[in-house]
Image 1 (cartoon, rainbow, N blue to C red):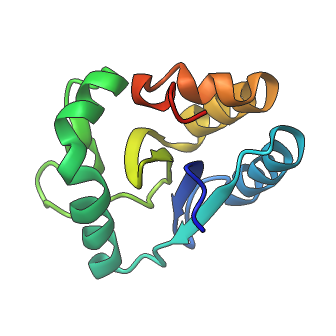
Image 2: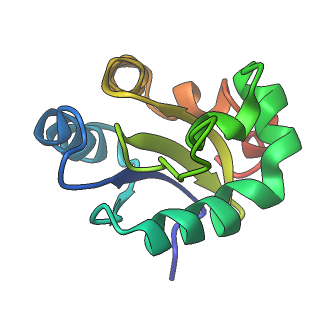
Length: 136
């Protein structure tokens, strides 16, 4: 059975600070019981596109509001090339109700969020998504 709320790390072979991020995810699970999943997209354009289209695009409006990003999920695509960059430099997402509830990308922002999740536990996840309040 899939956990109701968990973290998902989208990465590739060249994701920034991948080892540091996965180590911190392990520590969060051990300390706070927050499960995680690693989705290694292997730098494969097809896998990048599938992750974007399936996981992020259906909830694009909600994510734009929750993240406060001016570009929304478009920041996961190249402006000119249109290429998909879900795993480069890396993206962490909060998953609830089988959907992405919130995300951030890039090692500095990912590590900042994960350090908060390590310290505060599930309240760090709830603070980013009102729809999680009833699940946790």
